[in-house]
Amino acid sequence: MAANLTERLVTLFRWIDPGPGTSHLVSDISGWWRDPAVLAELGPALAAPYRAAQPTVVLAPAVTGLLLGPLAATALGVGFVAAYKPGDGRLPAGPLTWAQSPPDYRGRQVDLAVRDRHLGPGDRVLVVDDWVRTGAQIRALYDICAARGAEVLGTSVVAVDCPPEVAAELRITGLVTGADLPG
Image 1 (tube, rainbow, N blue to C red):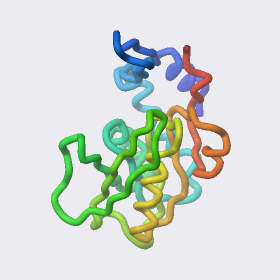
Image 2 (spheres, rainbow, N blue to C red):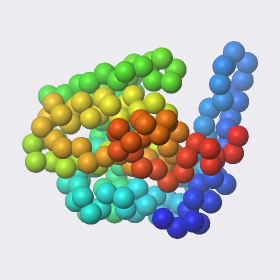
Image 3 (cartoon, one colour):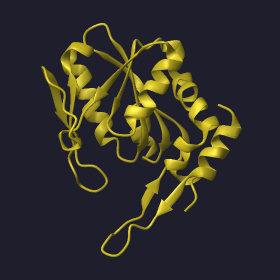
């Protein structure tokens, strides 16, 4: 990956204080989407570590994954499968395979669903997302892949902010680390 992309990701990132009554800052990655050079480079950069493994599909969770997943899929020349969350108002009709994440960094458990007809035996899956802190949602996506008979090759994210043992266990690669981002 070009050092320039790493520098731009760091420069365009912000922490936002959502105001009184909140216990934590919120990441603002909107600058990544606004910069055309970053947008053009994200898909190829996310795909690069897994290109030799020859994924057949990219799987990504709503909401940010619905942007990043197609960028990586296009760079690989493969299809894209969306993982939906019931709270986002976009649940598709038809048979779905569900999994629930273990608790995330805020103690929430997230339900995720994938359309059965888009994922199955013989699929070699690259999971893509923007950020990983605990790996909770990634674990749920891996569970869905296992239930559908698909092989997970690993996960590529923009920001890896999880313990090294989690990244190793889930085969997570990233473009920047949480420590790289301005505090």
